[in-house]
Length: 213
Image (cartoon, rainbow, N blue to C red; front, side, top):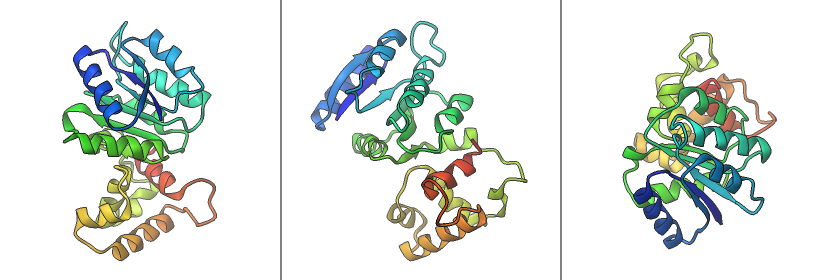
């Protein structure tokens, strides 16, 4: 897999480059500014991107905006945002297409290398991986949302789905059986009006409803 890496901090960028190569990825481009990132994302041979949110020249939201533009040009293009900040508006926009292949992790909450690599692989495989802080920042708690129909346990399950966890991971986190998790998920789909024949991936659409993008 050819990965575009965008990080303005030189030491962190070098460390990520070394890590990605050690885990079998090819670093197609490693950049520290917006023009370089835009050129790298325009390469049709790029398979995915790991981007910081704030980059030169203004250190505001350049990386995230470039990631959104890349997914508009190439729907479903896998992007893992790795940042110190949660940009609520752009996080919503990044998820708004309803497609997977998206991750948003906070640098100081990534516990270890294995967690980061696993998150990147899940994003490349079309999954959605979100830090709980990102979920909290973009969650719309309006009571007219179908999410209000969910029980407390179903909301816990849906929150873990939003983190990108599979049923087995959810079961482990909640100390319940996978069968119980599957039952909760089916109930979530029903309460969110997501029948089996709905267009798109029901799991992704359930997470998007949770985030109200």
